[in-house]
Amino acid sequence: MTLKQQWDASRQRNEDAVAAHADKLLNDRRWDRLRTRGARVGLVVGFLAVLVAIPGVFVRFGSLAGLAVVMLGIAVWLALRLSVRTIADLPDDYLDERQLAVRNASYVSAYRWLASVVSVVLSAGLVAFVVLGEGPDMWTVTLTWGLVSGVFWAMLGLLLGLPSMMLALQDRV
Amino acid sequence: MYSRIEQCRVAAGLSRQDLADAVGVHYQTVGYLERGEYSPSLNLALRLAAILDTRVEELFSLEPFPEEVAR
Image (cartoon, rainbow over all chains, first blue to last red; front, side, top):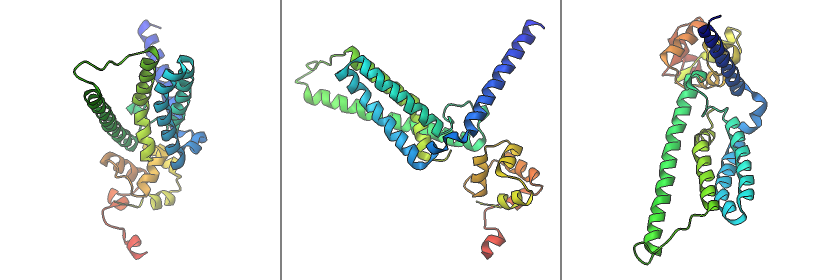
């Protein structure tokens, strides 16, 4: 067997494994309890609550407690992905045309929400800076390791989880 | 949109999963098609018609089918 044949065979095995995994994720009915309207809304609310809590826990209770909350967030995120059959994350080839349309619409919603949230937070920060500061460059923000870690994990969670949250709220998968 | 997929599928003795596998979509999508909650692409509509051995206009309509009007 030539090197190219070995490479092709290896690639085919990999593609078959991914296809089998995707098929299992899309058709696995063991997680149907997570796919009710109430369960999906609960997972979205729970995930948002964890994201909001992460920076506060990092700042107030330290890195170890913060990482524990991050682990909790990862568990909720995995459950959220299962509740929407991981459609937000699967490659196009494994989705049918309706699933693709729903997935694409969820990414549009996710982008709009992200843009809105970031715009509001940045605008509020700017206004607070002007209102609370006594003049230009009179207000100092101290960046600590806990604060940076907390904001990093919360933003990462928001970026990774937003498309699945939109899918869960649309309730069409 | 109105759909007669369910009647044709049952007449053909197929389950939703059978039909989904035959046309290459998820079983949920067949449910959405049967309830008229999703308008398929022309490609999928033609594949459905071929599998169910009927014509596309017998499967889908913008107006209620006569039997639905009668109900």
